[in-house]
Length: 165
Image (cartoon, rainbow, N blue to C red; front, side, top):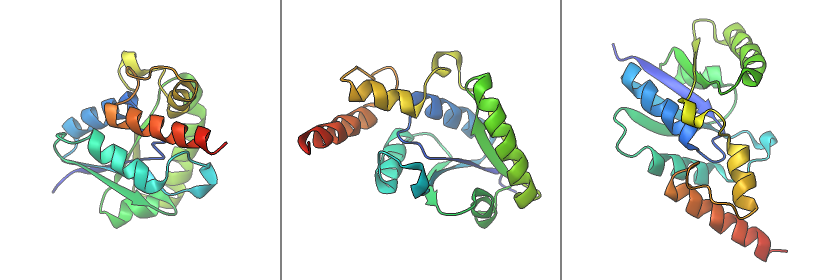
């Protein structure tokens, strides 16, 4: 039986921290599905299609990794793909309270779905999608934060936003 895990999130945009967790999870599970949330309430900077495209480009060559998107409750999506494990990243202790609450809520709705928390490597602990967008939006170099394809899309998006003003 193939061991499949789902790593859900908004990935707005994907960072080296996300990629670190994806690479390490791919060594533990036969298949890792990176699931991009379509949650419009989050007010994402990139569209779902853009985030999926960035992820697909960023994880090329990592064996056993697929990228998909989903609507609704993540536990329903996880069940629909035949997985029983959800991966969540924890950077700092400040992430723990929210993630713990979500894990308990997902357990209530998901029953037999287990949440596994993974920490990115030390070099990525401080990275967040929000930080990457803020730095890029202020004209800073995010070379150490995100893959080249993501940096290009960030530059294009900010250029369009500035042109619209």
